[in-house]
Length: 76
Image (cartoon, rainbow, N blue to C red; front, side, top):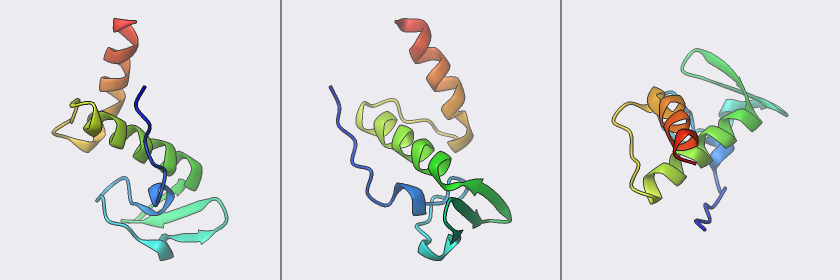
């Protein structure tokens, strides 16, 4: 089992990868890089990215995470 720390995951921009505390403008809302996201989804996305890095499944393109998740699900 791989444990992934959730620290700072909901304050890290899924578009540019920068940690931006002020991007959480309201509870549950993350706004940065001209985009608006649900903060819980931002956190989940970043936890998945950390998991992929820690297991050696690093993706060259940040948006490729959905494809990687689909491939992982096919292996099981």
